[in-house]
Length: 114
Image 1: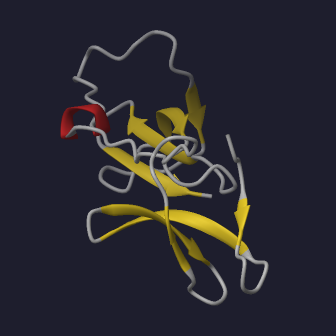
Image 2: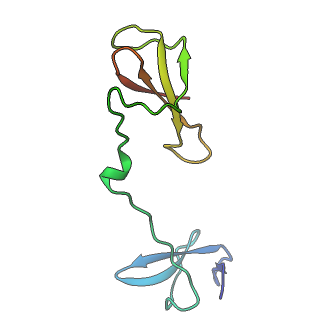
Image 3: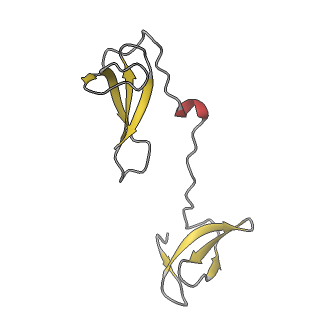
């Protein structure tokens, strides 16, 4: 199985694409196209998530006991200076995680991007 294929015209790397319902390899530099069968090549698929998988629900009064609290962050809704917090990688892996806060007084949830 070939892992990488190079263009016979210019020597640049070729990437797999679907063009007109066919699987092909396309040169990133000169645009040369080579038709291929799926045998021997692995064509990646994009992972998709349902809306339910994208949503985090934290019900009032039912905060998990494992979430830490932090003082010194001000709730934009009520001005309280204490909140629960957690971090989630919402963007690419080479970018910092997003910090979410939930006010201990009013329950307002907000986020901060690092």
